[in-house]
Amino acid sequence: MRETQSLYEWDADVSQLAQMREALRRRPQYASAVQRLAGNLLRDADEDPSLGGLVRDAGRTVAALSAMSLDASGGVTLPRLKVMIAGFGLVSPGRARLLLRYMQHLGYLEPDPRCPTARPMLYRVTQRFRTSYMRHQASVLDAVSILEPAAGRVRDGLATPGVMAALVAAQAEAFIAGSRQTTPFDLWYRVFMHRLAGIQILHGLVAQAETFPPRGKIPFSAAETARRFKVSRVHVARMMREAEHQDFLVLEPGAVRFTEAGREALDWLYASRLCVHLACAARALKALS
Image 1 (tube, rainbow, N blue to C red):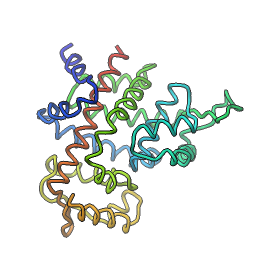
Image 2 (image 1 turned 180 degrees about the vertical axis):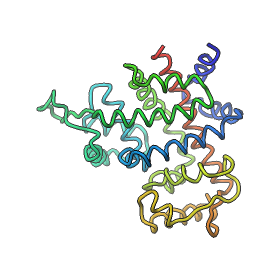
Image 3 (image 1 turned 90 degrees about the vertical axis):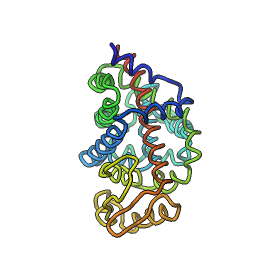
């Protein structure tokens, strides 16, 4: 009961994220939870290339969560997807059609056979996508459980009817409500989060750093990074040069080193994400209970 109540205490309005981040940073398990999260998400992308393709930038990540949430509340249509992704403030609604087609290409969305003449066309999430996304959520909750062990109950109960739907609905609502808080880090998002594989490159650097926020050198090879994340070496080099130009990191022979501004952005990014996932795990646990 103490573990359950401890998790429930994180069920706060995301307008209080600043206070939640401060509370999170005081936890001795904070750095371990961040590095577990980064490592888990990298592993998932390696083991499931389709899922990995869908979490390679902020727009695709938003589209995945939106599709899962819309599927649980009436189905996915292009107009509904446009409205929802616009709410996140991270991707233009004009990109919705391409994102919808990409999810179809992956075998993650299909026309709903129950409504073949519906206009606009109604799509549903395939079992393949549901299975992949449940595994993704389990990886997130595994990291969250380092901070709050009761989150492990949600992870273990994701297949229970209603729990997955409650979790993704809570996440969509929370990330949309907190979207305005990203404004101070718009430049960081432009350099990393909106570029293909930028999120995964950050996960890779965080996962192998000795501390969090990272201090000191982190081994880095543009060629190896490009091969691992299936992008061109030119793409990686351009991203890292831009990050250095914006004073987020320093490029050194065979390594990178995050500056104070880079460490601040990383800390804000991962702390915010863990706080949202803690809040949503609490809400999902209430649904499970």
